[in-house]
Image 1 (cartoon, rainbow, N blue to C red):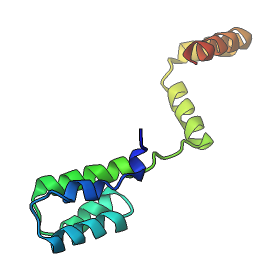
Image 2 (cartoon, rainbow, N blue to C red):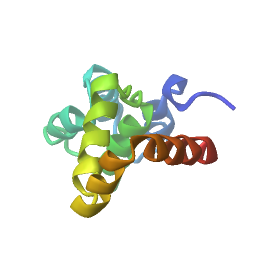
Image 3 (cartoon, rainbow, N blue to C red):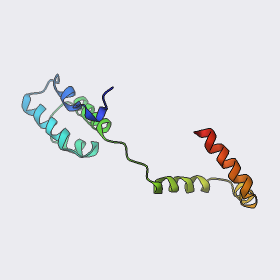
Image 4 (cartoon, rainbow, N blue to C red):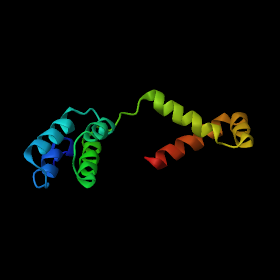
Length: 113
């Protein structure tokens, strides 16, 4: 299967669209020049075309964008947010028995993987 980021989605959408060549060329240029789907949406507002074609192009742009990498800071922030949601009595109990808490956490991590 071909990585969707490597396919020219704009060409596939525009080649059979009921648009004149100048409009297709403008839309194709906007699709390839836009950094992301939000910018493409703004650019396509300037092009006169049916909404369903513009929406297809915007969705294709979303598909073509790489997924953001999760950084260690993102992981740590997510872990802290999850800890903040744990009941205080459970956290107090885990602090009183750190060895047991560590063993339970390690078992949960192994089971998840």
